[in-house]
Every structure is written in structure tokens, then in C-alpha cells.
Image (cartoon, rainbow, N blue to C red; front, side, top):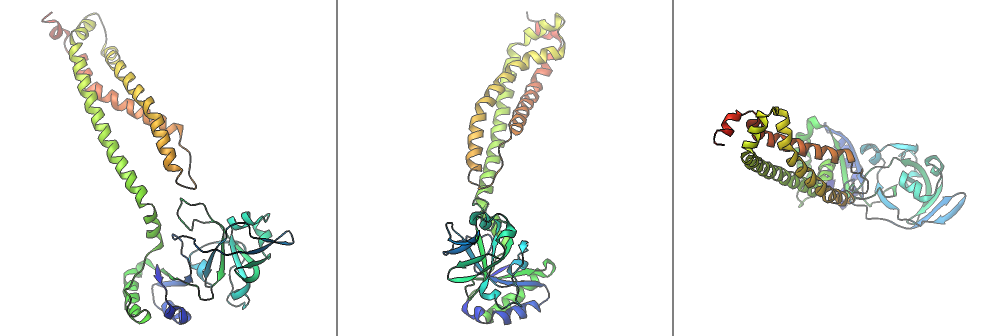
Length: 333
């Protein structure tokens, strides 16, 4: 759960944090300038040590100012080095933690190789004390950006609370009561990180829902058209069916005869639809920085499903004609 910060909260953050942690239902409290599901809009220049030499940053390194508990609260794993340590006074001004993308962009040969290297960033000199595993801070439509974490010197915008779901409603009421003291005159506003991530894909979900509805409508229209065409064709060939049965044709043979033409129509329509579907899906997938490829098997499965639907629809009429008494079809001949 994320609450907006303020100057009043910033100035008394440690007291507020201690107060919140005493409340049953609040498991952890942290502080940060940026929160996952938001944008990484802050970056500064600096120098990094690579192979014993200091070189200018030649890539954008987004910064996130946090307190000592942010990474633990957000459950962001350290894969090399260590987390910020509140018992080390130097960590407040000299410790930096980067993600794997920053290690790659910086030119270090490994995560362990980056730990302990000198860095000057935004006018602050220090060392890289740890490396965190890459994670999606922003939307999946953005590539994982190089990120550097540092202990805040007052640049915080949000308070993060890890809640026990069992006490969630009670905790929200408690926080709402406290808000009148923490930020008098301001409305109580908050959001949950998972819900905010879901909001990032709301447009995609709406498009998917519309495509599903229109697909169902298209299938229904196609089935009705096939049913009508099958009915007309069967009626036109009713006497032919009777003659073939008299000549010894079996029901399966007649079904294959009548269904062959419809199958070819469905196959032609399917082949025409493949490039449209392929390019449409490819265009949508390209809006995501990380995505899979369109599977040929999924396209073949869609074609097989279309043929099965066509056979079922046509069979509703052709089976009736194929099993009819040939005498009825030849009576007026």
C-alpha cells in the first residue's frame, strides 16, 4: 500500500514509521522517491570505476531514493553484495545499489565484479555495495532500465506499507484516522502497487475483450451462413443424393461429398485470414519490450477449429439428407 508523503511526514518519518509498525496488521514500512508501477523519470550524471579507471556514465541511469528498508519491504532480492545497513553511518551517503541492467550497461563483467567499485553519481561519491535482480519497475511495455538505489536525503515522495491481508480493512481505517494528523487539510488517498500495475494494462484488456466479442459474433455469423448454404446445397442435390444411395453410396461417402466443397471454402478463408491475424498480433506484441513469438501451432489449431465448426454445421443438414429414404427423393422423378 502506498501513501503520498509530505514535508510534515518527511521531517518526522522515523517517528511515524515506529508508530505504524506498532499497529497490528502493518508488517513493514519504507520510504521512496519512486514506486514500482510508476515511471523512472529521475536521472543524473556521474562517473563509474571500470577496470580500474573512472569513466563518465554514457547511459541513462535512473535513480531511486529510498530508506534502509525499501528493498526488503518490496521483496527485491539482492544477488550480489549486500543491502543497505542502517548500522553503517557511511551507507547514508556513500552506499549505492544497482540492478543487473546497470551492471550490463556499465561494462562490468559480472554482478560480483561491480560490487565495491567506486562511483560518483549526482555529486555523491561512494561505492557500489550490492546488486539487485532485474525486475519490472515500469510497465512491461518498457525495457528494464538501469537503476541505482541510494539512501534518501529528503527526496522521498511516497510511504510504502506492507499489510497483513487479514487486517487490511482495519488497517486502512486506522491510517485514515491518522491522516488528519499527518496531513491536515488533505484528503486520504492511497493505492496498491498490484492494482496500479493492473491499471497499466487496462487498455489491452479492453481491446482483448472487444476482440473476443467480435470474434464470437463473427463465428456466429459464419455458422449461420454455412448452415444456410448447406441447407440450400442439400436441397438442390436432394435427388442426386437419392440416386447415389440407390447406386450403393454409403452415408459417410455422401457426407464427404457434400462437405468437400465447404471445407475448401473454409480453407481459402483461413489462408486469407492468416496474414491479417499474423500482422495484427505482431503489431500488438511489439508494444511490449519483452514478448514471445506467435506460434505456428496456435495458427494451425485455429484453422483446425474452424474446419471442425464448419463440418459440424454442415453435418446438421447433410446427415439428415444422407440418411433419408431415396424413394422420397425420387418419387417425383
